[in-house]
Amino acid sequence: MSRFDPRAKGPHPDPETDPISEEKAGAAPGQAASEPDYFAQLLSLKAEFENYRKRVDREKPELRRAGRAEVLLKLLPIYDLLQMAHGQIQAAHADSDLARGMEGIFKEFEKIFKEEGIAAMDALGKPYDPLRHEVLGAVESESPEGTVLDVLQAGFTLHDKVLRPARVRISQGTSKKKQTKEEDV
Image (cartoon, rainbow, N blue to C red; front, side):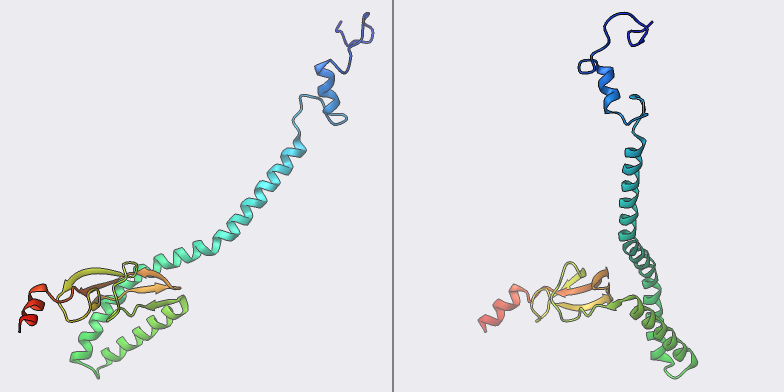
């Protein structure tokens, strides 16, 4: 017989000092001391799921934007090639059906770019900005040092963030030898 058996002879356990009695006293009525608290786990799981759902709802628009930007970035080389072909067609056959067809293609590109928030950068004649320009060369010039002289490949922004930097040639200023010769004269 166990010591908790009412038929047992001897002293009954003291609920204040008996650890098993303390566990049973803290448990909900009808719940054994060794059973986990399923209701608390359920509340915790529900709160975690709500936080997850809210985080996903916040991140969805940013993920969509990133996906769009990736696709649009892949279209830009095609746009560049079509633009080069268009320039050659305009030079040789300005009034042909082919030239008018190319104009239609560029109008559609411009419409899509406008809908998506893409804008071409205007870099020519502006100071070099390392966040917006990629320098492919420097040329001596009368322009102030660091001024963009040529745009070799157009840059684009997507909602005021750089989608593709402009590839440019900048001024490195006039050489020291030329300046000293001019001062001597």
